[in-house]
Amino acid sequence: MSIVLVVIIRSIIAFFVLLFLVRLLGKQQVSQLTFFDYVVGITIGSIAATLSVQVNENTTATLAGLVTWAALALLLAVLGIHNVWVRKVSDGEPTVVVENGKIMDKNLKKIRIPTDELLSELRTKGVFSIADVEFATFEPGGKISVQKKSQKQPVTPSDLNIPSQYDGLPTNLIMDGVVIEEALHSLKLTKAWLYYQLGKQNISDTSEISLAQLDTKGYLYVDLKGDKPYYTIPTMN
Image 1 (cartoon, one colour):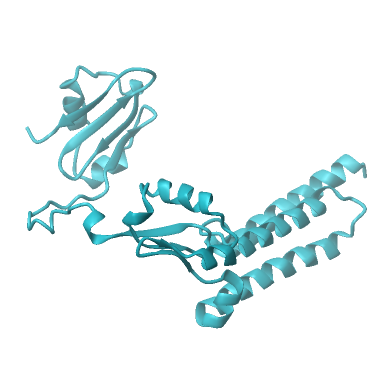
Image 2 (tube, one colour; image 1 turned 30 degrees about the horizontal axis):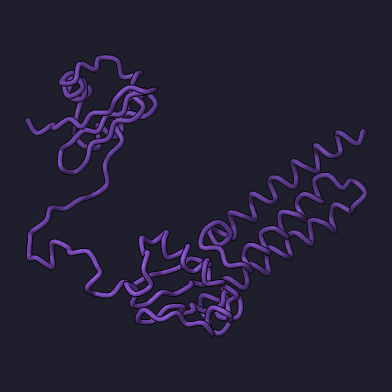
């Protein structure tokens, strides 16, 4: 058997084994990654790459190593759900870095985050002045959580006792020029209704539409392909 054919076969095996293991691990490896999760993910991927192209390596032994790493990661994740101590060891703990407008220098040094990086992270949260911060915390996944001081938080309708309407998720009716009939049926609407609404803006060809969404307030957002404009069409009349 030629080396190329061996690599192809081993790559197919590695691909589907890795797919199975990633699905088994769930979202632990793809969202809210801690540094440990990242290292484990890289290691598992490296072992899979070895299984794929290192033809001089024993296939069974490499598979055993791949499965072992994935099993240990899964075991640690399961234990972490039921045991706080295990979760602290594997993921770490949130670290307060700003308290009542004061930078906690010791905590910054503890997690080895320089002040300029802290300021950069705060700017991504719309905070440009440390004095506006009540608490800022670095989460185990490396993201920063910020609570502004009460006098710096935006006013909400509930603060002013103003009633507000339900604002749910919009429904996609057209994507890449294709009408999504299931979405229309779920809203008890018809193609004729949709074409009538589009006709308000003289849009007759749905293939020209990149995206059409209907929100819960009855407004149809239509984005045309290319550099053409977008429209917001009221459907209540």
